[in-house]
Image (cartoon, rainbow, N blue to C red; front, side):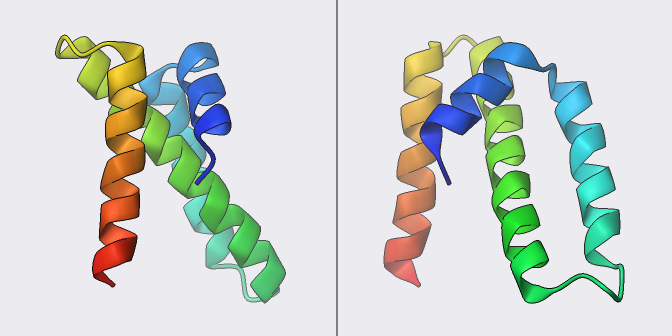
Length: 83
């Protein structure tokens, strides 16, 4: 997860475009020829894109962009700490 990437996705793409891109990347993951390195890169992209989708939703519900970004980062870090 990279907050600057999530911010850029949020600022430059609609939630709908990001969701479509995630669908394409998920399809790619099902390709038998995808290497572990490929899957790691795609997984990072999917995480960042879904983070931007969540930021879109939170901003639409009245949260500031900064708070939405920080909230997502804390949520992810919290889930890592629990693992």
